[in-house]
Length: 565
Image 1: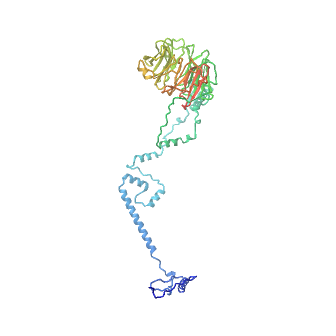
Image 2: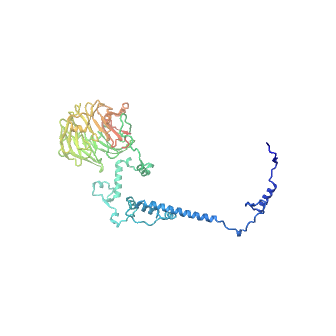
Image 3: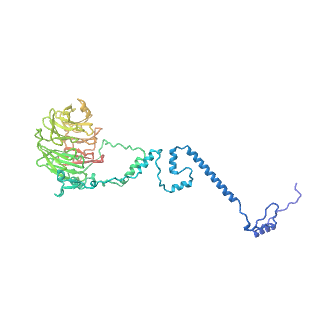
């Protein structure tokens, strides 16, 4: 049922306005700038309260109370933090507490004091305590001031003079008679000039700045970086691979002194980048090896002396040469620049001195004679030490790698092993399949002995089996040549064995060790520029390989596997 009480209808105005009475109140408040009194019992229409003067107003109490509460909380937090630090300090060792006091100060200091201590540099050095560790003491010792010398000797500052007249080597370096004495610095410069004159200039290996790269300045940092990190530092194998030998044909070693006479000896200097070429034209020539022009250093001409063999001494200071029809042994002193002929060796009754060998330690000289004799001489004095004899004739001989034994190949196909000190025969065996021997060689590492025969076969033995067994079996028989093997040479790393025959053109092979296989790319048969080979040699680090033929050319090849000379 509907209520009988009539409802008041809502009125909608197009422009709604506030009721007149309320609008009046609001305007009144805005004029007086006083908010209406809203206390209980107060009415909107009441009189507004008057504002008190500014001088009679009382300050509010809540900001002062809040500041006091904040300071109390800060003090409480500081007290709790200090108590926690003291609790932690009680559990620390005495050494650790001492170190923290040295660095951070006392525990009871506040943070502001700590910051002030860190800003101001400390100048006081505390005394070492007994509890300091060894690392601290070592660090302190490193910063100790260096002591000055107590006294200086004036004689040490005086430049010492060297006598030039009473020394036969220094006398030749005098430029005039007034240079009786030279200082050490001047003598060093003079020796440097003599060396460069003998070498034909500054060798490539002696130029310090030639190979310098921008990375050389950072070498120390690279070493430090290498020592501060870990990883796999094992690189790939550097051993010579078999199959194909990477090599390049270089300019002939004797291109600046051409000749048509047969080359009888080619040898690299053991310590310098120099190669020696000698032949039947009575001359021994020295060339600097650069692979491009190979400039000539000097030539030594021996009148009516066709050279059968020439060889460096072990230290490289002398050159020894023999002829095809003379018993004179020429010795050329490279330091003094003098040629010394040895006409007769006391006790040596050989009419012709031709084939000889120099021990690798530079102590002995071995001369092959006739009727099975070979003679041991002192390399220093060129005097006879003793003689040894084998059955038949001597075809070839060589020293072992330690220079304590001599291996001799006879014309009957036998190999003799002699002791140098006692000059007694240690062993004797037959070279397998050989009718008579022509050449013999030993490896630098003391592992192999190679024997070449007249049938073109090269037997490679183990040196231990040659000393212990009566009939040793060869490890490998190389049968790539069909004529007599006249030359055998191991390279210094015992990775290549060079074999050659002087009886057939292009008859030279390079054998890879220890696979005992022949490199297929040498020689290049189509070019036919090698001809008959009479001598061969490798450079001290196997970077170069040289051959001498009957046309007067000293062929030279660069072996790319070896980076050094």
